[in-house]
Length: 186
Image (cartoon, rainbow, N blue to C red):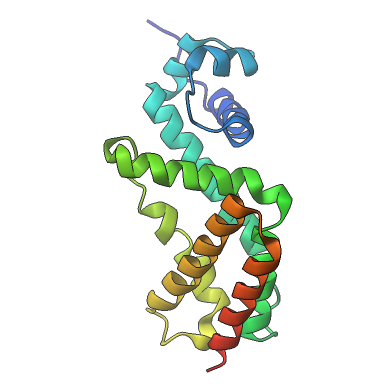
């Protein structure tokens, strides 16, 4: 009879694997270099997660959870205007220290378009943000069940993040965000 799974070890490994993927991306991810970086073995990674794909799924869920948690912690106060909250979200999410999350986000979306079977929960990468963004923009939403407002906010922010990540043109993307913030007033 084998040793029973150790949830604490799995949680530690997941945290470290997520850090690794945020630093190195998913492209060409192999269990041997990952295991070496985590000071474990490929066999233990497979034992703890079942397969490489299940490990990747867990890492992506953890990265999304971290991102949503950190955004919720850094949301501007709800006492300000929707425009001020949007500006605050943009300033936080587009900061250089968030670049690893942003790159991973786009890498996963691109891979999901080519290999949807590897990312069965890819839609959650979008819908997971509905609660946070819905709460942040409640004053400009159509009601408690409004998913259109968070969809629009996320689409604009995601598009501008893609633009900023690709071109590095901070001035233009900041101005575009400012223009969208003005439209929230109308």
